Image (cartoon, rainbow over all chains, first blue to last red):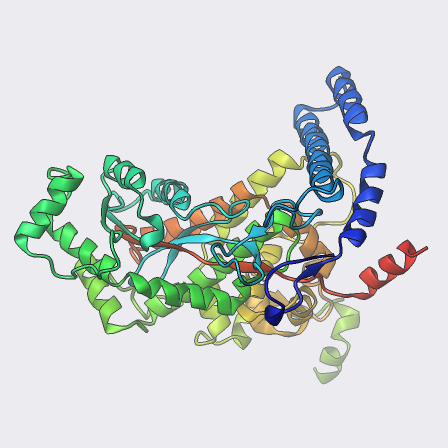
Length: 309
Length: 182
C-alpha cells in the first residue's frame, strides 16, 4: 500500500495489490492487440467495399485501442516492478487523460481531475470559448488556442463592423514574455496581464499610455482610448471569478461524463447554457452599473424589449 | 355538438393540437432562455458533422428523434441541473421544456418526437466531438456578436479546476458488477 500526503487530510491510500490484479487482467486481454491491430489495419487497407469515411473511422478506432493498451502497459510497468512511484504519474488506468490539478501542495493529497480554461467578456461574463485540455498544462498554454477560437467565432459574423480582440487580461499565471510577444504580434494589448502582485492602474496617464503602446509596438494599431479600456478591463480582471463561480453552480466543478471527450462535451454544454442565461440578463438589462458603463464605452446596444423572437 | 366533441378522437383520430406557446408565457424563464439560441444554425452544424462522420447506410427503421430536441434537452439539462432521466420526464409533462425543445404543438396522441429515452440522449452526446462542440459555441458567440449584444474587444482569460465525479450507481452498473464477480 502506498500513501500520499498527511493522514490528517484523509487516508489518500492506493492499494497497489488491487491495481496490480485489475491491470493484469487488462494486460492479459490486450497483450495481442498490437499484432492483431496491425493485421486488422493491413486488412482494412485491402478492403474495397468500405467507404472512405468508414475506413477512416475504423482506422482511428484501431489506433486508439493500440495506444491505450500501450499506456496501461507502461503504467503497470512503473507500478509493479518495484520502482518508486513517481509523484502524480499513475492516476487512473482507465482514463489516462486525467491529471493532478493542483501543483505545489506536497503536504496534502493532490486533487485529480481536469482544468478547463475560459475566455470571457469582463462586462457581462459572456464566454466566447472554452478549452478542456488533456492533463494539467501551464496556464499560459491556454491563451493562444482560446484566442484562435475567438477569432474563428468572429469570422462567422457577417454583418456589422469587423470585430477584433484589442486586449487580453489574465492573472500572474499567464505572465509569460513569449506569450506577450505572441499577443503583440496579433495586435493584442497585454497590459491586462500583471507582471507583479501590484494591482493594475485603472486610469493610466497619457505618458503611461504612450509607454504601453511603445512597449507593445502597437502605436499605429491601437488607440489611446483602447489602452484606457484595456487598463480598466485588466483592473477588473478578478470579476472572472464570478463567471467561474456561476459555471461551477451549473455543475462544471465535477465531471460526470466519461473520459476527456465526455469532459469536453459537459464543459461545452455548460458554457452554452451559461451563455444563454447571460444573454437573457443583457436583454433584460439586469447588469451591474460597472458592466453597463463598460458596454456604453464599447458602443454596444441593448435590444428592443418589445421585439418578439 | 357536445356529442361530436366527445367522439372527436374516434371520428378524426387524434383531435386538435394544443399550441405550446399558449401555455408558456413570454416572461417564462425557460422560454426567454431558449429564445437566445440560434437553433437553426446549431442544428445545421450538427447535421453536417453527423452526416460526415456517421453516414446513413439505410433509410429503414424508426424515424429518428429530431436533433433540435436532443440538443435542447442536453443544454437545458445543465441549465436546470437535471439528470438525463429527469429532463426526459419533464419533456413529457412540462410545456416550457417542450417549448425549449422546439415542439410547438402537443397532441393527445403524441408523436415520437415527444418521447426521448435517456439512452437516446446519451448516444447523441457520445457523437459530439471536440471540434463540433467548439463549432457550436462559436455559432452561439457569433450570433450574439451579430446582434451586438457582446463584443470580443476586451477579454479576460482564466482556468479553474474540476474534479472527476464518481460513477453513478444504477441498476445496470450493479448488475454488470454482479455478473463480473466470480
